[in-house]
Length: 335
Image (cartoon, rainbow, N blue to C red; front, side, top):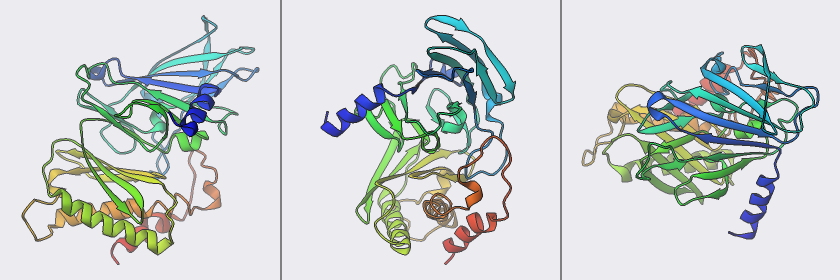
């Protein structure tokens, strides 16, 4: 363990907000979360789950997927009052608070959470209750290997800051605040992993799902796209590591940007066939999707209107600038 990593680990252990994520029943599509707060509000700690996710500008009501929730303090059961569809409040005058809840994860999309016996994918907006008044505090999260992965075949991919993780990614991560915590999706499964450098920055393409394709062509084309965009906005890039997180499915298509990664969903037809020189329309669509979401690394993630600083994820946030967020980005893709 390096000095820097050791310092991070010590800081993580002393954090007041700690999550533990486990998967005890993947066949039932469940995510188990334990949230420990060492300094809850004396008036009764309020907890909230976002109602929408940045980049997908619709109310999603993620809290509807919380199927159970309970709490303890120093080993004693405590009451949790539900204030509205996505907000809970604990008893007052607690020295500590540990909340256990279960999330039903059966939304095969880039914006929510999906768990089965082959993989697990989740966005923080589906899994992490926010601690009212402590959103600016540092957070840590420990992610355990799914119980059904008895042969230890799965790997974990995320751009959260690792603190103490094993060789395939399971372990403890940290985020400086809640907004960052929920902006790094997690994928667990058996991957096909491609790596390349763009302007000196490490990039990965992590694909979940059976697929056979021209891997070098994808690397070469994405390197060209990423380097062009980094130079367009001006090096150095605002990221140290970027991941294209790709779910390869039988039917589906879409993407959602994050500050150092993007979650993508495509079919096998979107990938290039080895030995076929001509670029197919489907593969061009895939490259366009990657380019679009990568461009969001700057436009939306780091160039955003004051109305969205900070995001209010509890209710609708109206804007007339989607033409710039999405339209301008798509216009750029076609240049």
